[in-house]
Image 1 (cartoon, helix red, strand yellow):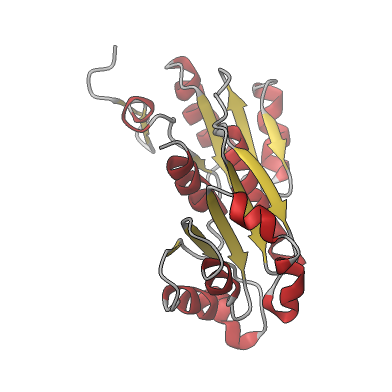
Image 2 (cartoon, rainbow, N blue to C red):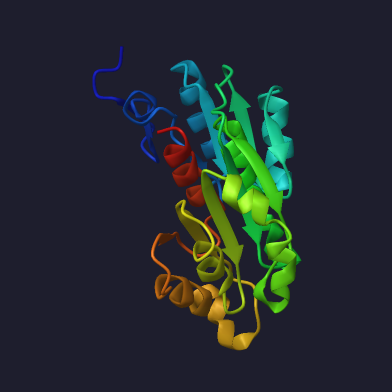
Length: 223
C-alpha cells in the first residue's frame, strides 16, 4: 500500500488516493503530454486499481499509439476523451440534460455527455436550441422540467444559460465555448455573460471545459 497516496514519476505525481477521496480516479489531461508520459501515468492508475480512467483532450494520433499499449482503451473522437472502465457504475434514476446553443458547440457538449455517461449518469441531449430561435428550446420544455441537473453549452453571446435557468427549478451548469466572431474573444464574452447571469441558480465553469461541467453535474445528480 502506498502510504503517500501518490506515485512519484518525477514528471508527474500520480494521485492514486483520489478515488478514495472523490469516488473517481484522477483524470489525465493529455494535451502537451507525450505518449510516453501518458502511458506511464495510465500504467500506475491501472496498477493501483482505479475504477474509471479518463484521458481528456486526447487526439486521435495519441489514442492510436496508446491503443496498441492498452487494447481495452476506448475513445470518443467528438469529445476527444479516452477511457477505461474497470467496473460498472450504477446509474441514478434521474437524468442530466445537456443543451447546446448551436451545432458548433457540440464538441464541447460531447465531452460533457461522455463524462456523465462514464460516471454512470442517464443523459439526454438537446442540440442547436439557442436564443435565435427560442421556440426550438420550448419544444423540449418537458425534458427541461424532468431533468435533475441541466448543462448549457453556448458560445457567441451565451444568453441561453439565463433563459434555461428562468424556466426550471434545478441547478444549471453553464459552459462558455470559444466559438464565435472576433468580439467573442475566444470565449471570454460568453464567459462574462454567463457569470453575469441575472437568473439565480447558474454556476459557470471555464471556457470549453465540458469535462468539468460533466463532473460537477454528476456530483449533483448522485447526491
